[in-house]
Image (tube, rainbow, N blue to C red; front, side, top):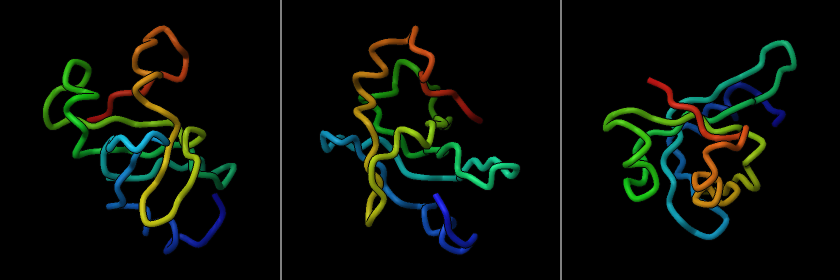
Length: 98
């Protein structure tokens, strides 16, 4: 994602949905690779309890890879997280963050 720092900060607070329309969470922070000047992940909070209750402690968030993002607008659409969470052995499994 290219753009000015001001444009990147507008992602914070946006709701994130799977491409099937399931609410996933809200963007709390952005993970950047400063060497490549690229967004590499989104830190989500206010998580959907149905998706994460058995995987994430209350009050914690998740870090999802930015490559899961399919569209950014009023909301952010990502690949179907539900299917990815059902395969914990997959390399792209979401990572817990404090």
